[in-house]
Amino acid sequence: MQKVTLFEGDGIGPEITREVVRIIDALQLPIEFEPYDIGKTAFENCGELIPQASLNSIKRNKIALKAPVTTPIGHGFRSVNVGLRLAFDLFANIRPAKSIPNVKTRYEDIDLVVFRENTEDLYIGLEEEIDENTIHAIKKITRHASERIIRAAFDYAVKNNRKKVTCVHKANILKKSDGLFLKIFNEIKEEYPTIETNDLIVDNTCMQLVMNPEKFDIMVMPNLYGDILSDLTSGLIGGLGLLPSANLNEEYAIFEAVHGSAPDIAGQNIANPTALLLSACMMLDHIGYTTEANKVRHAIEDVYQNTTIRTKDVKGTASTTEFANEIIARL
Ligand code: NAI
Image (tube, rainbow, N blue to C red; front, top):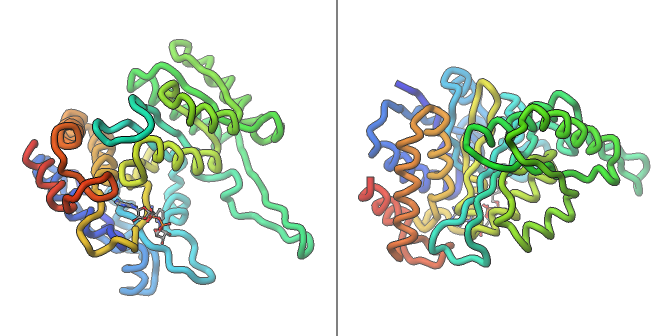
């Protein structure tokens, strides 16, 4: 029996988690979810955003499915997501963006994956006040972190029959930091002669993504560019409600939707569970249930392609539960 730590999260978290668990349960796999608290709910219950029991559960199970959480606003609250990534050194943030049939956007046939380095760059939070009108922020790029994210992108490309890996950087200006990232990319690409490669400066990448997003395949980049570009790619396929993600290293993996806890629509049973469900599919792939993951993906495609049952964010009127019922009917 594979145990999976489950965080229902805050806001729309419990509503979408309930439906995703119902769908995964319908597959009748030997998977058991272990629910734990994290985020605002955990803070209200026990005074901690990431309780030790929750951390221990991830340590035991190595795999977690996490719904979005609300980070309370106030001095001293570090983001739960950053906290988890650092606690488990989850260096790879993987965000696939694939067009969903019949979800109307400006583009069709998008099928790209962003590999975002998750542990360094400007996100180490080292800002120094030189004087009240001058702040320095440290951008940290290391060989160790760059090598492992770039290699993860190439390994994924090989494993998933992808054709091309693009390195995104700003090495023309940040000659040393992004220069090192690009240098390592050029070294590692030699180990993967069957994969086509190129590199693009981040500003040009934004333009190309808006003009011709279907030309991109796998993209790998430092933390900040990955944060921004992966939100951009969610917009290309129809919005935040559709984009899944994985945060992982060789030992631990946390799967979650890219979107937040959406307090503006919480408690109404109208949130789109697709992003969390696709994240659960990535989890099934990770455990080795690829056939079952694809079964769920096909069910999602079928519902979007052949019915009008969909949630409000993608121009429908269905509730979260009604959408999930349609998926289950196809399993
Ligand atoms: P958000 O992603 O929660 O919401 C942005 C907009 O997208 C809202 O209009 C919301 O209704 C809509 N939306 C998001 N997910 C949706 C879904 N599944 N179905 C339908 N509509 C959806 O971002 P926001 O409002 O900036 O943040 C709200 C809270 O979430 C904050 O406390 C923030 O810290 C937290 N957050 C948590 C994340 C996580 O746990 N991974 C990631 C991003 C934000």
